[in-house]
Length: 109
Image (cartoon, rainbow, N blue to C red; front, side, top):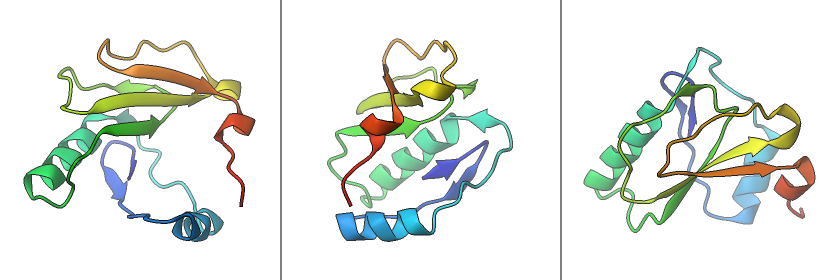
C-alpha cells in the first residue's frame, strides 16, 4: 500500500516473482504530506470485509514525518526507516522502530 495523505496504490504481492516484477516497475506515488492513519483505516476495512485475514503485522516504510494513529491496531506494527535518511522521530509507544541500512533491506534476486 502506498500512501501519503491518502491511499495512492494497493498491490497484492504473493510471491518473490511478483515482488521482482513490482520492483522493476515501481515508482513512488503521492508526496502530498504524510498521514499514516488512512493506511490503518484501510487495513481495518479489509479485515472487516474478510479480504485480509490472519494479519500478524505491518511493516511501514517511512521517513516518519506524519500523523500517527493514536490507537494501537490489533496487529504488530514496525515503522521502518532507512538509516541514510533517518531523522530522530518518536513513533507511538505501541509500535516498533527499525532503522535499517540499504544492505539490510536488499534481498537476493
